Amino acid sequence: MRKSSIRRRATAFGTAGALVTATLIAGAVSAPAASATPADGHGHGRGWDREARGAAIAAARAARAGIDWEDCAADWNLPKPIQCGYVTVPMDYAKPYGKQIKLAVDRIGNTGTRSERQGALIYNPGGPGGSGLRFPARVTSKSAVWANTAKAYDFVGFDPRGVGHSAPISCVDPQEFVKAPKADPVPGSEADKRAQRKLAREYAEGCFERSGEMLPHMTTPNTARDLDVIRAALGERKLNYLGVSYGTYLGAVYGTLFPDHVRRMVVDSVVNPSRDKIWYQANLDQDVAFEGRWKDWQDWVAANDAAYHLGDTRAEVQDQWLKLRAAAAKEPLGGVVGPAELISFFQSAPYYDSAWVPTAEIFSKYVAGDTQALVDAAAPDLSDTAGNASAENGNAVYTAVECTDAKWPANWRTWDRDNTRLHRDHPFMTWANAWMNLPCATWPVKQQTPLNVKTGKGLPPVLIVQSERDAATPYEGAVELHQRFRGSRLITERDAGSHGVTGLVNPCVNDRVDTYLLTGRTDARDVTCAPHATPKP
Image 1 (cartoon, rainbow, N blue to C red):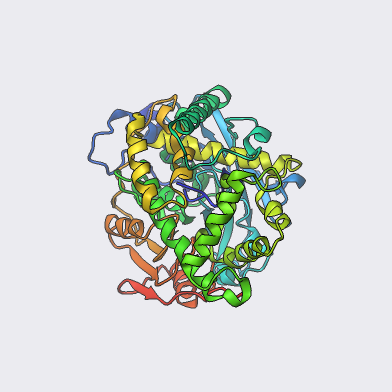
Image 2 (cartoon, rainbow, N blue to C red):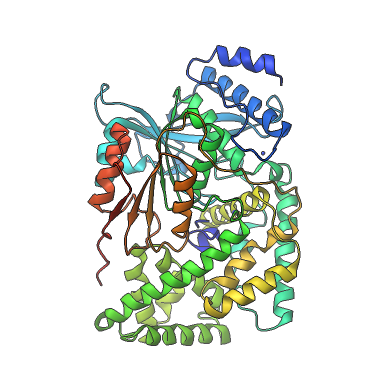
């Protein structure tokens, strides 16, 4: 599942005994007893049972230990008064007394009175591979959208296992990872496909060589267990959670494993949780949705031809794109920006409306003769070693989680057939997405069976927010989760497609999110909102 940028991940879419457990739980008043097994019905069996016990042990241990909060390290770049700390979790929940890893967490206290406080709101931004540590900065930056919620909640972020400051994993040297130009994602021959297959296989091997100990445990269920341990370490009896993009799947898995631990849950821009979709089919569905949103952006550019001079019809804008792509394929711009780098840059427009204007402006400058602006925007910065390390790490986690979460086709003929067919009508992202995920075809550790996401005893109403034309997480995913989580409520932003709705200014959405988080109330029925304001040149 593609993340927000190939350069940054290159977004939405990347693991005791019963008597001891009972004793530890009895001594941890802030940690409710963990559900022993998921509401699954498909026979995950004793492995899940052992991991559930391990999660209960770890949560009880964390509840007793708490978190030693202190000023954040300077190189974490988090403004005061945000505080940072660590929570210890088992690398393998089936062995809760085995190797432990530390997860980085941060927080800022609620801005309201003590009587207004409702606990901690924990955030995950997606990926897999995204860091949530910037979440408390929504308070320090005085985000108006989150001002009401901030009065009631401490804002808590964390780096999921494998990410950033939480036992980070790696698959390749970061400077090699960002080097450009990469090969054109669209293959022109069978030799091109063989070369890409070789790169994907070598990448999978690199993940095992550099991070093999962690790979079997880099799964969404384990991250959900980590989330429950963080809840316990915070002293929270139940979880308040906001998840965006992949964070919605993390929330769905958490809600299935720990239904009676949920207090409030908002999921925004929803990954389809069907076992049939996680993860191979979800990526194919994404290719179709990206093509649709790419056309939406082209329509907007055409409607603003007076500002951008790229053509006053979608076909004319597409023709300019094809000319640019062909020129970069023939001779990379500035020696470093070829078709792969162009897709990395231009995909931001289908992802986020906030990218519509800057993307169009840089495209317009190129057509007018200014190539440098596009090179500066799309080329890697080899001097940014910290940023490059973060990008490589994010890509490694994305790959590790998606490849380990579920079984992927091992037969190249399946990939070739499906992506060749899709590319005919959806050429913008299809092959680029395929090569990014192809390491999963030769993944060196056991691939799991995804959890059967469903309603368990004690799960409260979950609030689902989704734009109708989202490219990264197609709308059908929100409908699927709505059907699986009984009592959930769906807010649809009509005729819109920006990924991540809750952070945008749309009172119809914002007011309902506030009401739910502050009171637990939802509308009596599902709601359709008009779109947020369209960007203006």
